[in-house]
Image (cartoon, rainbow, N blue to C red; front, side, top):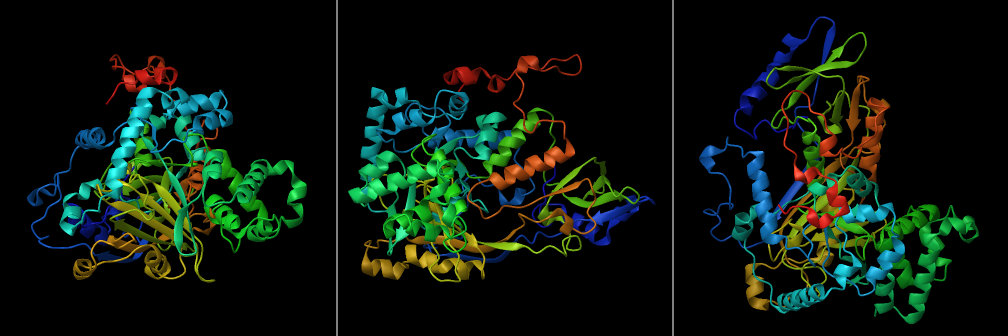
Amino acid sequence: MFEKRPASSACGFEKADTCEETEPWKDLILGNEEGIPLSKKDKTIQHVEEFCYASQDSVEDVEEAGALPKHSTSVIPTSSEVLEEASATTEEECVPLDGQSSGVKGEETSPESPSENNAKCPDDHNSVEVTSLGEKHSDDVTSDQSVSGTENEESTSIMDATAEPKKITYSQIVKEGRRFNIDLISKLLYSRGLLIDLLIKSNVSRYAEFKNVTRILAFREGRVEQVPCSRADVFNSKQLTMVEKRMLMRFLTFCLDYEAHPDEYQAQKDCKFSDYLKTQKLTPNLQHFILHSIAMVSEADCCTIDGLKATQKFLQCLGRYGNTPFLFPLYGQGEIPQCFCRMCAVFGGIYCLRHSVQCLVVDKETRRCKAIIDHFGQRINASYFVVEDSYLSEKICRNVCYRQISRAVLITDRSILKTSSDQQISILNIPSMEPDQPAVCIIELCSSAMTCMKNTYLVHLTCSSVKTAKEDLEPVVWQLFTIVTETESEGTGASVQKPQILWSVYFNMKDSSGVDRTLYDSLPSNVYVCSGPDSALGNDCAVRQAEAIFQEMFPSEEFCPPPPNPEDIIYDGDGTQAEDPRFSNESEANPETLPEE
């Protein structure tokens, strides 16, 4: 597999870029072959606008902690160094909760959640899956050590939350730059989604750690409030009346098994989901919660069936790993492909970093790709070629019409909803404020998610594009956040209620999901195109696409099968390889025997 880099991003690439202009690969093309050049520039990201609002005093002499010296930019750290650094960071900052050494980490545990989890997750194959991802058992939650540890954590978090937030300067952000892991597209994992099932089945989950999304928020009448999800949350909620609690539980119980009651929705199945909710005698408050915070669907164009399916999926994912349906991988979404890469490398996968592809070599008679030529002029034979859409040239994609995604990433000094704990991962869905404006999905990450430095929050905003990202998202940003300059802060003090933006960036991304293969012009039959990230909250589209491509290439093989036991592997040659205890399936039967790294 190859990694595409800009020509000016590494030493020695300027020479390669000059070679590309003269197209030396043509000398390697035979008479019965044709060369199809790939795109030289990635145009996935457009309309980038960056703003810094933190104090920028004496930033000239500030360097990023752990950064390479400026005179040795060509030195690239080895994979072992990177892994050692990541391991050290994990040991320092990722403190195990309730005696756990790895797996899903949650901040708060409801007293009734263990019984609910046991009721929803019977002791079957799913229980094995839960153990492999590190789900908490009820025995652990009720242990004295666990309770005392939780009390200490809560008392500490309350003291931290009541204290005034520290002033963060730009020099601090630069110095702690390696603490920030910013995804170009931010997503969450449904606890019973296709990606979680694939991670468990393929045993790739051993390479990653996850954290519970602790809160689902709603924005209504100009204020942010927490949405009750589980049964315990609903009946403990103070923002719902007793009548509303009963109405909500009755409707959610129906949605969990709505296929068994077709008479309840058949008459309105083609209507909007928002109109259907009005016929169910729900209060406006409950309609808002269900539409925007549980189903998380568009009010304008979502039909009743799609709304019921989305609500059912939300409810089915509750209780598997926590009080919300979502998980977030520590260090960001970029860890997920790395986990698959590690498993692939164990079984012989080869990765060529800083190694771009110039062109495809296609046989004129069969119209199949038979080789590729890299930027060094080396020809590499290939039976199949899987490529992401942005690598293809404009000539191949001239008939494709792309959608656009508007994105914003903010670094703030506090959470959008202040509570006793400052380590919260939250999701907030903002409905459209104007008829022509899209709904905006907001994911707020804390420092314990390993995506930002301490005392800061990383906020992702995503929506479908209507205009530029700044024009689409700025109205929502000003609703929830504020900017306080140094002169204003000196005059008003620290009484600002909204979170302050320290740094922000807006950009538009090309959404290539849903593009039909036939729209690509002159594409060889054994070249398979993957789409880039889509605007959906989950990863089901990517999993389905990966499985479809794999089955086309290898129809008789299983997609991402479970890895074999080390003792069952037969190695070629006379030499024997030492068994790595990390790849033993004994951890499934006794997860506590997994050695600490």
